[in-house]
Length: 482
Image 1 (cartoon, rainbow, N blue to C red):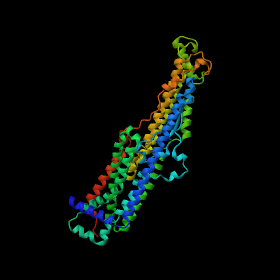
Image 2 (cartoon, one colour):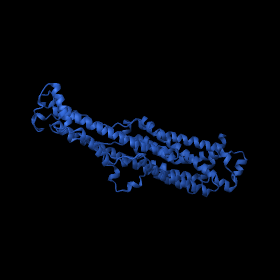
Image 3 (cartoon, rainbow, N blue to C red):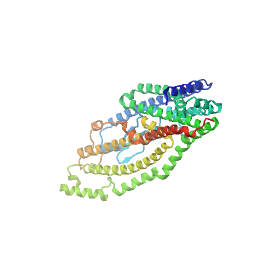
Image 4 (cartoon, rainbow, N blue to C red):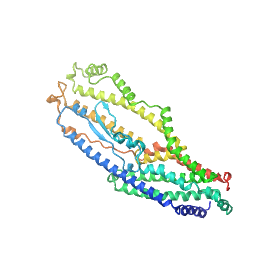
């Protein structure tokens, strides 16, 4: 292909499109929409970060100011942790609005992460939110198709296509040149939005705590550039294949409807049908039934813990738990907590495995649908995908387990076996122990998780580029100038 010829064709698309009466109006509308979406998302992120900081500080202050008491009471007093938003979440809300933000942690129980924005909204959120990612993934493709549907078909209708081809322009040069011009037009909207997004990212105070956000931003921008180039080539190719501009426009709109609205919903339903997951009631019931079979650490006559008691008495050569050199109640609580945590972790791991199978089924549709690829990649780079949420759940559960076992260890170490009630003075320890327990700190997933979870999406975009390149190369055999 001749570079000069490609530049000439791209420039022709650029100038002719910008001369249209409605082009500048559309550019203005999209710019305003993106400006509104970015500032709204950023404002919401700042408010959420401030709310998390305020309530996290209050939770910590109340925890440390608890009076002297029995450590097991503190284990049931519990702790509240909040899910922080990644600095890039203002660009792509992803699943954040539909997933919980707050979880209450206590001994023996794994509570659900609650208070999602969707659960607290008036129901309008089900129709979607205006984010920069939504505009770029759903609306900008429509504009690209609108600009590109007649780039070649109109040349055919006007009789100028045959003249171009007889002057030595090849079909591959024509398609690539026009597609490059169309891609350049999309950058008029995308690059200002990306620049503003970078400015907002830099001004976010929490970005300095997460320097990987800049690398993630670069990865996300690269994904969108590939996405727009694919759409530009598709628009021009449909225009070249169609006998009329009207036919090309209808096909492109049908393509957009099917791949952005229909296929994502259908693939999700099919994935959930092939890999069914238990309901919350079924999940909780299965966990509870297994815990009942394991035994109740609060019941001294429970068969499992009675056997544990007998083994301890034999090992230490005593005939009563009161003669053990450590607090028997705390020891039993520690054992019970370990068993219940292992049971929950096993069931939770299986549930997440089912979710991953469902998600992988949807991910594979990206080989048929580039929209699915960029949607998944954008969420992953922004830290708003399910993997980020699941990692928060794991960290919260690890913190809950550490809290419960720390309180059990304090009971084992400082409280004697002859205590009758947790209200006895000898069963109370200093509040300094509460302050010694560290605060919860949410650590975001590293960049490597994007490649681990979204390699299918990345490969699918590469597949689309190769496929379109093959079509362009072979286009001269199947396309006509009249």
